[in-house]
Length: 106
Length: 407
Image (cartoon, each protein chain N blue to C red):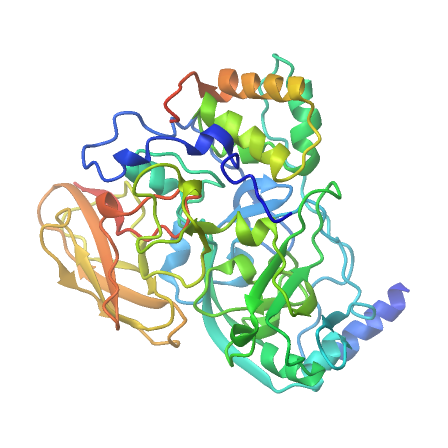
């Protein structure tokens, strides 16, 4: 199998550059820092199913309405299977560690 | 499925004070009290170290100095995937592009078919994420936006080579009843219920000359993370529909409602494509499409310290939706007076137009360098205080500002 792939690659190189990916690529794993406590294990269990923690760190500190909206988006639009009580745990975690209490939206 | 709970989309997050949008006073509450998170610089396959906002899905941002070149090298070109499940290997012996749906003859094309059975065409075009420069919305308007908080580095310009989408569709024979073309690639969500990344366009647009199914980028195979082996190229348009690892083209008689067309990548359907009052999703939606005139500064870097009397070559790139850049103006006094810059080589109307300006600062102090592009139909970049806000943070194109210190 490997040999066939190599041959195919060589044949292609007659008309184009050699395929740059001739074997499975390995994507780096990045260990983004995650604040511990307040049920971070619940946060990790659900959020990290679909995306890295970099997504949240990149947002900067955000308000409670912001994090509430974001969790709602994950559940309603991306269909994340997060039970109601765990949604609240996740929101509280982000407001405490990556946000602030506010009703004004930002 | 007809009714989206749009009012609930993003929930309360969206219902914030859009009425303050045009208030000119400086934002009192900074929208992102950023907890100084600096993405690590990591080299992914076929890439130089890049700002790694996320590893899964990969989100890699180019550094600002990339804008000192009109053509972006493949190994520094930004990366943005939507779904976490991306194949780690593409076997070209078995990979096929399927063309199906409302056509006379469904096609199953190998890369070799695409290279040998269709006329190869090349186009130099900017590829820009709809959310590029999003972080500046909160910095300049004081209002938060949802989505990846990109700097300017979610864009690049490359020479794309491939087969015309039109030629492929004509080989398949589009039915007279066909109205839309759907495109998707091989990326998949982690859970089945998550909407797949599926994009649509009108049949008329799909049959224009300029859309190509590319198999080469800057004379090489498309890098794996930029969509090897095939990527759809839509010159002049934001990159939402420039599908990576393109695997299926579905011709359709009817529009298919999807999250990625009808909710994500949409803006208010009004003249400014922005929120004037109320919440964003109270407006009728419109998908973002044509890019807006924009210029960015590649050199010098923000907060540079420059010796008085040095001659420096201020440079950067400008582009628009494909009308062509007419002029890029520069201000060194915070926007009080403007001068022309020199436009460099013209790589075509969809490409970056590099501009440069020779500057020899003679007085010590703090300077704000600003650049402002205007295109051939008179579209001009708004000043940062004038840009219209939208909750998704799309289409940011305000005048770029770089502060430097002359000592």
